[in-house]
Image: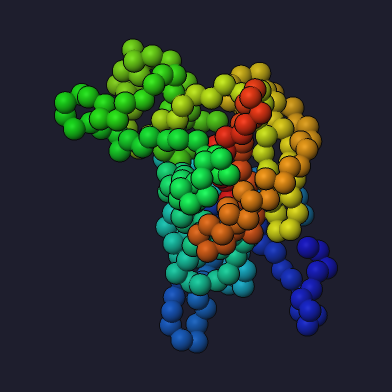
Length: 270
């Protein structure tokens, strides 16, 4: 963006920071800024940047580059809520970023699309949601055949996921999950030939495979290769783009099975 300007010639100034260095305050008072962001000094600043300095920024536009939650319970939801409150525009919109922080909420919207279009046209994987606890009877109220993939809370990048192959394994895992407050989900383990991702940035679309040594196709030593475009992907893109008031930037992961069918796993908006 160096040297870039608006159509009226006004220079564009870009300030970049990480969630952990950010403080936000938002206001609706007339005559004042709707959002003020304090960017604290970065312990490892980018070369030739202002990240080593304390900066106070009144943004006109927001660009989200990574997830506002992380491992060990780190959750920057209050910062996103300040951005939503401020009504400052962004990509994606702050309100959509807030909604997509919860994986189960996103999957519920995908299931709504599947209910409307049918499973053949929009083949989203089935899911079971647990609020992390039973009724007290120790009985699983909704039965699920093993093996299943258990995913804990909103972790990404392969964290918080495990294949459970039997009831005994499930009981062991549950004894650990009971020590946390996080929800978890179950999905059927899908045998597949490969996984591919469809990445959308505005009007630009890219399809590529992610190959790895284990069942987590986004974990370990990854090998990327281009994947051919198919017309049915446009239906998926057009529907996902409408989520939460509209997404300008997103990606979704798909499993391709040996019988030639596909299963949509999840959507990421960053």
